[in-house]
Picture 1 (cartoon, rainbow, N blue to C red):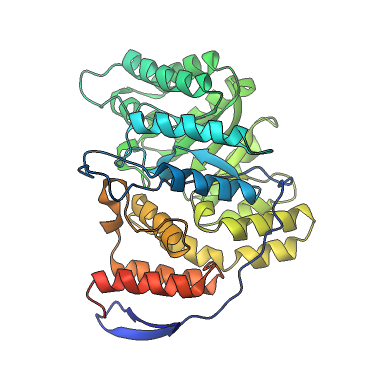
Picture 2: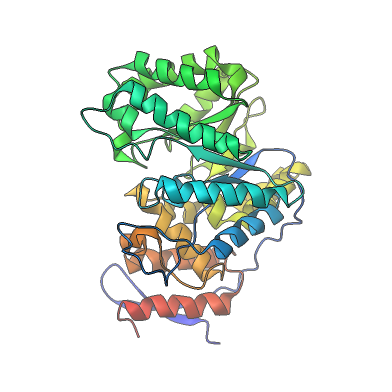
Length: 388
């Protein structure tokens, strides 16, 4: 099959692009030991479901679970029902419950499979009548469900809490109560407003320095109930500064899709573990790099991840919250699903120009596992946009 395509450019013209044939990094599979590495994974919509996509969600359960088996086969852990799965962007709590139940059960059938699942308050609509007690009850419901099916909890940020909290003390109260109730240590997720504008001012302050101090105080007070904290602020310097101040028992899980190679590699004293949406896109490269780190081959680790960084920065470019479109697009190009449809119709959230550039960057990073298939699928997407 011809590996030359005509791709759109920003000036409205088309240019020929020939695939490089860059060989993908090969992961040996098996457990990863040097770091804890979660891929925050996407869901596969059912394209034939008789629903109204902006109002309802329907999943292709087999394709969705098959992707999780693929991630586990590479030695990566699965972060389930997180923002990458479009929680708060078309994916409702009712469907998330079924996803968590199925995925946790699937993990039990695979030796060594690790999974943690998002618990938040997304079934509680923010509004003027919502109280802290309502937020606590909503969190408790979701946490109880995750634990009831044998899952680990990732404590997601709450739009309802951001809307009704009066200051840092309210966050301390809510998180303190929840952490006092959970059975096993949880991962706390600080999701920045670049990922979700409704979370602006989280931890009770519009000033990030003050918000940081509030979160650190919660971590210090409740460290035995906290496995780690996932920071999604796209701010490497702040992440490094924060992890130096964590109790030694608390992990820093990087959510920095702009600078993950260096934060995961570490500075010789501390490092960040990983809980990243981009690991869905670059799963084989991430696995190969982390296995190299296990073997003490830092040079190979860096060489594998270096070409993935321009791709990640493109996928997560502003408006960052629409990165999910790029995640699913990558899965479509690589044959993990038969279609490019998304929950909520979010496949339309990125222009074809953006998708064409992602295709090029995936090729250059060796992340097209079947270049002929990927080229054909890119042509289909271009054809829908009128490019013949």
